[in-house]
Amino acid sequence: MNPDFSNNRICQLLGISYPIIQAGMIWASGWRLASAVSNSGGLGILGAGSMYPEVLREQIQKCKQATDKPFAVNLPLLYVEIEKHIEIILEHKVPIVFTSAGSPRTWTARLQEKGIKVIHVVSSAAFAQKAEAAGCDAIVAEGYEAGGHNGREQTTTMVLVPQVVGAVSIPVIAAGGIATGQQMLAAMALGASGVQIGTRFLASEESSAHPDFKKMVIESNEGDTQLVMHKLVPVRLLKNDFYRRIEAAESRGATAEELKEILGRARAKKGMFEGDLREGELEIGQVASLLDDILPAATIVRNLLHDYASRLHILQQGL
Ligand code: NDP
Picture 1 (spheres, rainbow, N blue to C red):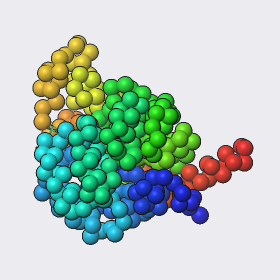
Picture 2 (picture 1 turned 60 degrees about the vertical axis):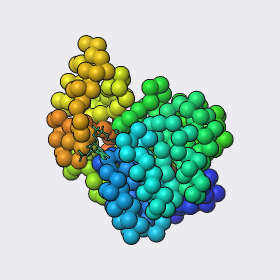
Picture 3 (picture 1 turned 180 degrees about the vertical axis):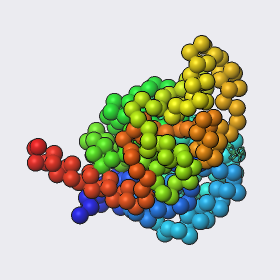
Picture 4 (picture 1 turned 90 degrees about the horizontal axis):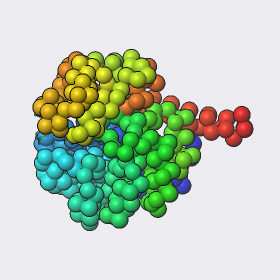
């Protein structure tokens, strides 16, 4: 039997059955993945950062056709055409928006006026307090283990979650390094009301990441991801030729401008969507080294719940 989360703050806030939230991942989380997670009782998210406005519109429409459950859009606030994305979200009455990489003061009130729940991603207790002051409904506390864009504080999830939980009164969702039910239980033991999971869902059948990238993710080992581009936006990547060039440049003290030049444009698409495993930017979390299979999203949710419940049972036995 699945655990009962009917009194859980995040489930109540978002109208979902399980506090399992799929992260919005550029090039990997379109309507197929988001609707599969929502249909399984969690919350699916469309990763709008890589979508042109018309693509986002189409993805929202398809997601609505594929599920009658709540789903969300993740909006990196530094997205170039953010106002168009906001208009589309309002027009299509998306019920929940996760914002990241920017100030929550800018858009939260405008979205909430239309009845949209707003959840902001932070990497420190100080940012969490700012998000609460901006009126956000909940917070994602994302630790150092996470893939893609990362905080400058380099605080691990184990340290970050209790710090954030102690600093705010709105519900906290833990993220970074969570792919199993045991890890979900640990995050909730630290005070989180839910978990956000990226890497495990990227390696799913429904994710739109390139099959070769998914394969590289599940074949990766300890130490295969590292944080780079500290002078731009720190990003956790799988090691490949591009990573090694960036890493070498950073080691010799390259400037932000030089790093930008090496990065160029559309490298995330090249790696994660087009499958150029040598020259693409391969954003993934540290927990990739724990994964060894590509599964349907519904199986991932089922496994999370099963492993959460069985580990809880073992702990309750005092074993
Ligand atoms: P680049 O500037 O290198 O390239 C832009 C990419 O975004 C291109 O591949 C382009 O597709 C696509 N794109 C989607 N909409 C637009 C638009 N309106 N104008 C121009 N390009 C668009 O950016 P990145 O690939 O590094 O990042 C893309 C987005 O993803 C950014 O908004 C960024 O904030 C977000 N991001 C979020 C991360 C996270 O962890 N949350 C991590 C990394 C990025 P095409 O090639 O088909 O033109």
